[in-house]
Length: 99
Image (cartoon, rainbow, N blue to C red):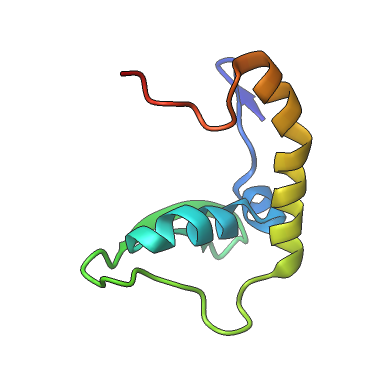
């Protein structure tokens, strides 16, 4: 979807592909945070709130059997496919902080 020249991914696709799981697992959970997706009565998915468990020193984690391996693999594959072009064009994968 494109609005005002900005491309948007559908929230359901974001969740189903594995981006939500990996964003939470790799970045937000260790910080004690989690982004949720809400499903409306009509089945439409929207971004919900951000859970806040920063007072838990160990952060958050998925329970047993909740991590979907195929989602992990899809996101790692997407990264592997994008890495060469981004690294060639920009010289990095993760944007460094300017001093």
